[in-house]
Amino acid sequence: MPKVLMVIIDGAGDRGNVTPLSSAKKPNLNKLAKMGINGIMDTIKPGVRPGSDTAHLALLGYDPFKCYTGRGPIEAAGVGIELKEGDVAFRVNFGTVEGEGSVFDKIVVDRRAGRISETDELVKAINEGVDLSEFGVEFVFKRGSGHRGAVVFRDDLSDKVSDVDPKKVGEKVKRCVPLEDDEKARRTAEVVNYFVQRSHEILDSHPLNLEREKKGLPKANVLLLRGAGKVPHLPKFEDRYGMKLACVSGTALIKGVVRLLGGEVLDVKGATGGKDTDLNAKVEASLKALERYDFVLLHIKATDEYGHDGDFEGKKAFIEKIDEAIEPLLSLDFSEVCLVVTADHSTPINVRDHTADPVPVTIVYRDVRTDDVEEFSELKAYKGGLHRMTGNDLFNIVLDLINKAKKFGA
Image (cartoon, rainbow, N blue to C red; front, side, top):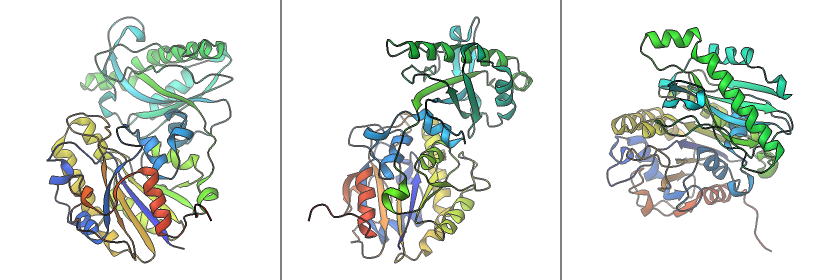
């Protein structure tokens, strides 16, 4: 059976007539564009800003409007928390707050705590020091990659509560409030607020943070919770499409999507989900995975981080690193492997956040109708034979190319 390798360059797209992707030296990506068929993609649909979670659901053949229940459960699955029915999960950032009074009186000065990466001691302190027994609630808190993590509250609770994260610096930490006039929602908000306050007290005086303060580094002294949700019940990828799914990613969110779909997450040494990730190891692991799996997702995160940082040259340089690392893909047997190269969304330098600007797509496979596009970029791909599509469209096109599509009608 033909195999599929889908390479997702997270946040690679940008805005304007000169972009990091268009200006980068990328001979290998350009060769693939010339070898294949090209187009542009609105991952969700035109004008809808994709999250990485909803985008990847769409790219894997799931309608995010029907199956998305919030980012929290996906992040929790990604960090390895085994979710149970009734659990309410949040994604978490370690952040930095300053000021006097309770945590809710303090100002967020850094939503990523200087992109702290070593948080094991802080996670341990919270798990040992926070006690929710007075609420009759248990919790599970685990770190993700870098400054990220996830927390699950376990009891008969509600996910209809607001975020604690203000999502911008210069604002106070928000109190969690119920979004429904419901006792479960009110109780859940109370639990969340207690957890955030108590964890702040522990973190603010933790030796690791006191040492960071001495060094002039931001203290990781607050947990910013957002994206409450309950575990979704999704049909497994293999049951739905008859293909074994695996992913190579250093990012908890992408791991979570794949785990929720019943796929396997492959551990790769050096795959950090950050700017220091080992791209060569990830490419090598993805190629090896094609021996055992039918559909392999290779996710590369740092382009998105450079976009969020507003760093044009950094994003451009990292795209050039990716281009070097993917050279082995040129030697694939394209009579047996369908290669897809794309992005999940744009993260423009001048916006520093996800936007709905469409992203380029290249498919290299036997018998595809090649076009005149010779460059992998958002400025050229729209001229290609695939024209404009959604993420679900792309997945269906791939299914058809490998003769796995179901006939519609008689």
